[in-house]
Amino acid sequence: SIISSSFIMLISLTRQSITRVASQSAKRSYSSTSPLSDRIVVAVGGNALQRRGERLTIENMLKAAADMAPTIAKLASEHELVLTHGNGPQVGELALERSAATFDVLGAESMGQIGYVLAQALSSAGVTTAPIICQVVVDPQHEAFRDPSKFVGPIYGAKEATALSQSLGWVMKPDGEYFRRVVPSPPPKEILQVEAIASLLENTPNVLPIACGGGGIPVSRVPSNPRTLQGVEAVIDKDACGAKLATELNADGFIILTDGGGIWQNYGKPGAREMKRASPEYLLGTKAGKNFPGSMGPKIQAAIDFVTMSKANGKTEAWAAIGDLKDAAKIFSNEEGTIVKEDVKGEGVVWRESRVAFEKKQSKDQHKSG
Image (cartoon, rainbow, N blue to C red; front, side, top):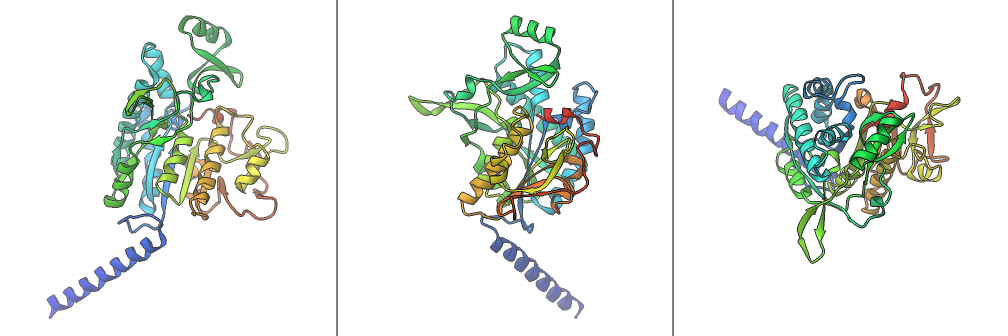
């Protein structure tokens, strides 16, 4: 009968679906009910929510997020995704408004603000999200507190920077031809909500977690009672935290999306060239990104950290990538951006052909990504 035939067909399709999911799960080194075969953590800079030349307002952030949402939605439809984001411009703006507030509180505020903006935009693109406020444990005695390096907030001229330093006690450092405020940026030691993020991935595959925004809220454990937490005056680098998050989630890939492409040699100089693929050993050996310690340098280090930490955990095929937000779909095929992985043949690097540093009208502003 028609009913019997339909029932048999339904059983057949169900078995095929179960077999497909089981087959994909067998390839994984983590638990998941998602039919998608790979787990990716994607990090976008805080500058992705601020168009060049526009004021940092909620309205402008919503517009920028709406522009970005289709790209993230497409990635989420093809991969098991976790989204993290920077907060450099936003937390700096909040600090201007409330100079007496500590950076752990400002970080939490910016995380909620940006999480809402991204959730709003992604909902319009058909993606259900779960923004998660994440606390990240750091060492309050780390050397980063003796030499602040994380740029936050807007740029200033020399006179204005000096005035702010004297009136508010801010530490200011050169960022190109201008100055910006810098704050301590200790490395993340422990992501307290990582189990909640993993549970979402494993049990609710249709929900996109937004986690560890701005590197998470920096906290430390009280030595006399380690269960007690206290806020720390710092901003954790979002890419460093993203690499740790990706490692702890046993992700297959970690993508850092910028507004200026992949990793370049001699950026902005004659003969500059972009890397197509590079090994961690090559990047470390050539000190790639060291000329941009407040921007591209941490992104490269985060990519290296994810690949090497994954290898140490037995995941030798893990890869990281750095590329332009608008080229996100082409990064997977290595048509754009730079892939960082083990076992790059030859000298450990493959260069892109016939590409100069200004092909995409890049500017040094790309190195100010949050």
